[in-house]
Length: 82
Image 1 (tube, helix red, strand yellow):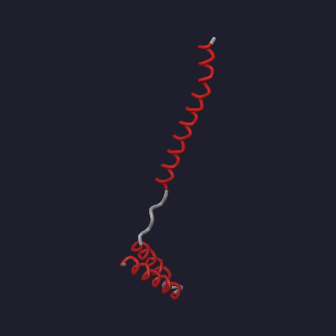
Image 2 (cartoon, rainbow, N blue to C red; image 1 turned 90 degrees about the vertical axis):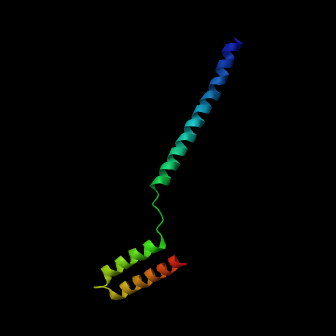
Image 3 (cartoon, helix red, strand yellow; image 1 turned 180 degrees about the vertical axis):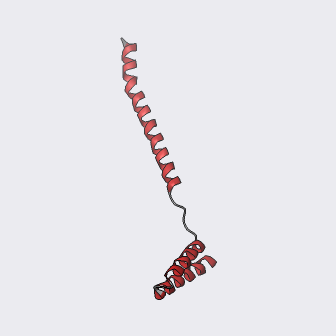
């Protein structure tokens, strides 16, 4: 009777262990996938180039906004040069 009762009492701890292991594994996989899906940070030089492209697109219809974009691009380029 003691052998049967020891098997019965070890079953919940085994189930808890397996549930914990599965939970930890699932958490690891989700964290890894989310880090892979996160977009890479843009460098200041890349941001400056993107702003200059936008400025070129707006220069014909909204020249003051295009000038603001170019000024922001210059600030990004200055920051990148540091």
